[in-house]
Length: 248
Image 1: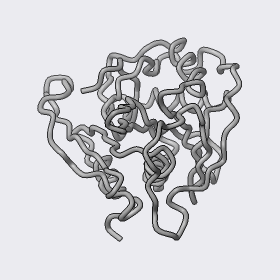
Image 2: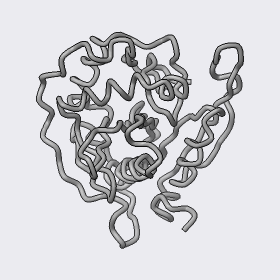
Image 3: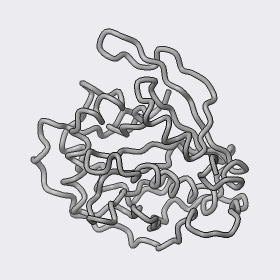
Image 4: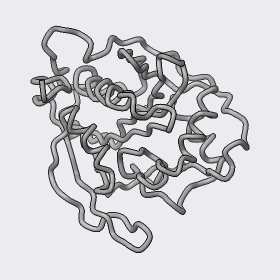
């Protein structure tokens, strides 16, 4: 499926295979990271404007620039030291662990701290915190990774912890980051995979405009059963036509 080792990626996406899953049994151990984040660039929400969407011309995306994207309910921004406590809770959440398919494969608290301490320095991917504007709390993350320069494509994953569910925060966060990918970074294709035992996540992606492409059979071993995953994607021309609102 993916080539990176697994992280507790999302209650809505299979683990996007990254090196630092959570360690729920050590949720309150290590200190927060101390490295200061790269200053954020404030960028208007790609989906907030009323004028028709435009797709950025072909160019090399500047993943080193970590923007701040503002929606009605959520704010996407670079990670801050204070986010780590809330991210620990999200990574230790049983629903996150199960729906991302990483049960039994979580990594150490030390690796989790190092992971978030280095996200703002990455130049080949974009990781942003999802912040609930009503409370100011970090409730999860969104990620564009696995950049394919020739095909102008990225993988997408998200994690929304228990504090951000059932209020539309995840849907808005997906629209914001996908819009940024097409309108600011010049991507042509954004893809993801979602396990079949997570229909709620699939519905969120469909609401934003992702289209099912095919099935990865028996993609996950879940205790004594095998679970399929659906590959979904959205293309730049599709985004330009509906801006994340395919149902009107």
